[in-house]
Image 1 (cartoon, rainbow, N blue to C red):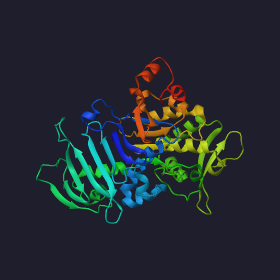
Image 2 (image 1 turned 180 degrees about the vertical axis):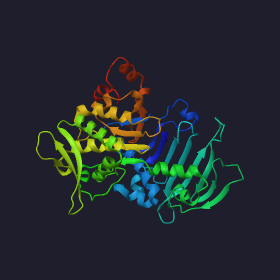
Image 3 (image 1 turned 90 degrees about the horizontal axis):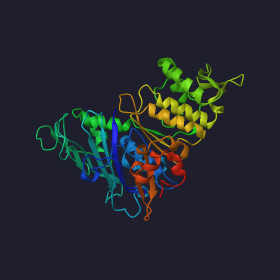
Image 4 (image 1 turned 90 degrees about the vertical axis):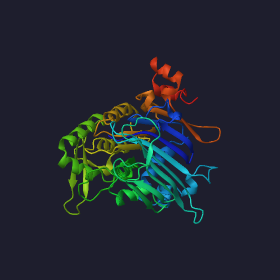
Length: 411
């Protein structure tokens, strides 16, 4: 299972300089711990939780399109609206520190995005992938890809690294796109570049809306829930046909969590080929379709489909999943999330933002990060387990969510 151990974000909206987890073995991170399989960011409105969520989305979008398009996607408003206030002449920068598995050497990806002086368009100022040599547990990781403004070098093969003459290749890339997105297609001899690209491309960021989930799709199986969940019926069709035991488990879970739901089936209209979900409520003679179900029921059902995917995304990011859910379901929902995280193959790393105390009650201090605004208007972040008095109160039996509600975490 691929796992992000740390991410650093600079000059992205209110995230002037924010680091979560561990970034290599740099002395600055000597006492830092890697991100947990379930990581939750909490904070008041306006402190930057949505910016953290969107930073993952921005990186993912950059893998699929040019930088200008990514800067304008999802209402971002372009590069000038993304760069932190007062940092207009600086770069937006990301550092991702991750492993393909616990046994693999970690890889560090660094990218800086600025504006071209000539046309004002966003370009990749620098991009680097680094890794240590096999058998070398200390020392500075060496680059196997490094470019500035689209020009640089890549070292081919599994073990090719900076300093080796063999395997070195000069490359010229379009600076308006991430090099790893194009190189993974052009250079087949460096599986590390390909794997990293596929890792980011496979991230799942939930842009779920109930209205999207209520749409009636055309019949046709689809393996994975899309970002808006408007193909919910297609995924049900796929699971019921190809993974009936998984689907039955989902039905059992939803019936336990949502009182009254007895059975869920898919129905294909033979005339127009539309696909309907039929929710059979125990108190009614006729079933309801997804168009008639509540926001909370649809949301919980979509989350269960997502978590029980037979081939799940390695990284799942959900913004404020509590919206629309009954508050007493949130503890159960956290337990459900934990069942599908971990370091085993087939599990996912899950990243969530929330401000719901009932959800925080079910979390451990090492899983929770508190985001605040500093006196300059930028975001600061700290892991709750590093706040001594909070850790002591939790050890004495105080619920973490109650401490959050009482402002102990936000002092």
